[in-house]
Amino acid sequence: MKRSRTPLDEYEDVAPLIRQVRFMTRYIREVIDEDDELRRRLPELHVAYMDMLNEEFAPHAVALALAIMQLEDAYPEIERPEDE
Image (cartoon, rainbow, N blue to C red; front, top):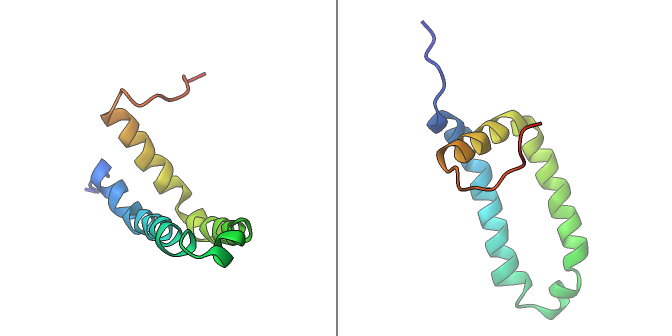
């Protein structure tokens, strides 16, 4: 019998993606924000970063959505759009 997936399973699927975002956020804060030349190029770098994220995250869209839904269910105080 196949075991049903749990919220932890969904999180484990997306945890590496979350680490990528955390790393890039730290990189922007600690490297780009501290360098005037790089800071001037931030819009260009941001577009490139977003393109890369889209490419990397696309295959994981369902797992990401499920993980977010589990998070919302676990924390009802998270504001979210009402179901239509």
